[in-house]
Length: 158
Image (tube, rainbow, N blue to C red):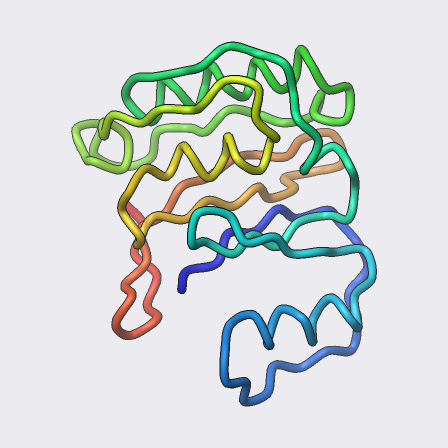
């Protein structure tokens, strides 16, 4: 199972991955040591995210549909306008081939869903797609998409 991550900038903790029988057990062990994080399973994907209500709270809004990059840009603008906690979120940037499915696959975000659900919806049905929201500096967090190799755990950037 691929893991999506929303970074919150919390100080590092003394946690080391060990041998776990399931991804869920690994995540349970992580959030037990790093209380700033929680994890949520959505549509068969695990998302590690800050332990803040805004990520799981339903947001009133319209549905979105279109190519992943354009839909993600519109959704980030929606989040920024509807949740003050997301004011520092920056839409994804194009890196690599603009014709790659990473950017052009048609995706849909359902109306009135949580921010987590909307972000997972941006991944579409491909189980190798993941997202990350990484802090770039004190004032910006950026949304990224990746395709991961499900067989070997190798990350492939497009």
